[in-house]
Image (cartoon, rainbow, N blue to C red; front, side, top):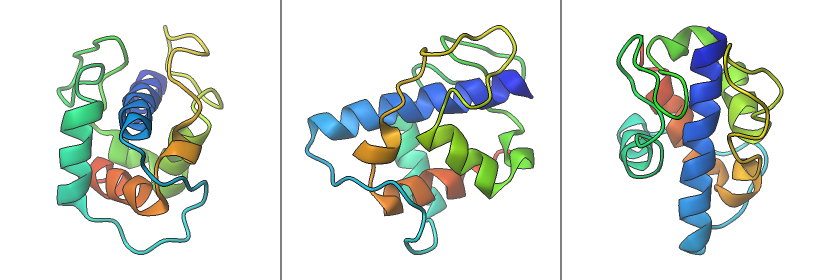
Amino acid sequence: MRSSLVALLLILALALVGLAACGADTASDVSGGAGDAAAGESLFKLECANCHSTAAGVDLAGPSLAGISAKGEQALHEAIVNPDAELAAGFDKGIMPNSFGKQLTTQQINNLIAYLLTLK
């Protein structure tokens, strides 16, 4: 479970770095509208999939996110905006950037969470 959370954090960190380079709006809360899983999947594929697999037991630079939906919305949000709060076993602090909460819009975070909730 911890490795899944770290993987999620790494994916989200990469997504934020990519979006920051594109001039994305900033937001640090989840008060936006409901997330769009399809948009979240697209963002995941562009920014997160290089470091996080969605296949069980396949760790890349970050842990696999297979089954991450079991963590729930709040934990996923925390993993995005505060990636060092809880680490997956075998992963150290600072691997995933801690700037996603500022670089991603609230809607982008919600979209990522909506997608991650589909990973049963």
